[in-house]
Image (cartoon, rainbow, N blue to C red; front, side, top):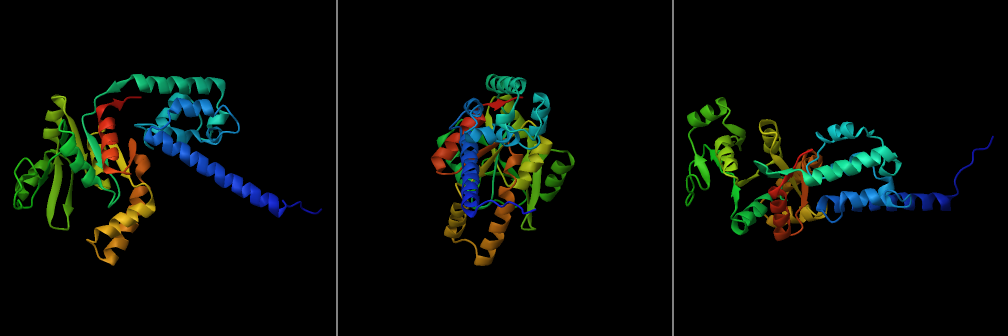
Length: 297
């Protein structure tokens, strides 16, 4: 029996349609993360079989919501009694009703976070965003690290760093007084003291900690209530341009950092929020907005 094959013209058309659908779903996910469209609007649109939202996976939908990462998404699915294989268009009446209620509940229940962590890949601009927030949003407190290195010219104790010796740093580690710590360049140690952050939180102050990916993971374990924000570039090409444009690394070092950045970008679903660093003022504004409230679920 002769096997029927799809005509070439139909195959090309089908491939183009599939690519267009993936791009449309990607646009929806980006719009959800940036706040340009509400989750309820996407859920409404998924009722139409010809919409991109119809074929959006429930897992992708949830991961685009504020304060839901890969660790919390399974719990949300269990609460909703929805399979992780479902697409929005395939939700039953009762599943859809529960999802609407879930979204409404998240909107109404808000609490103040004790700490916000800003992390992201190399050259994405974490330090620039943190500096902009320090200068333009004086109500935001930036976390101050402890370090074993000596002060540099112009650095002030308690403003730029807490300068401690190795014995004191060891004591802080042993007494669980650091949310995270690391040795930099195999020389000096840096860490985030817990007590100042807890004191500021009790005073109702918002605290921002700008740190690398490994440090963010340590903070998540040490202080699960912390909100983690992942700063991402507008595109991979833009990240490359920024790194190369700095002119501070050799070509070999640039390649090493870019390889690391690829791995780091893949970790963004571990975070509660994703902010695109398109422009410094806009990204900083978005970070500050997210710091104002943290949603429970």
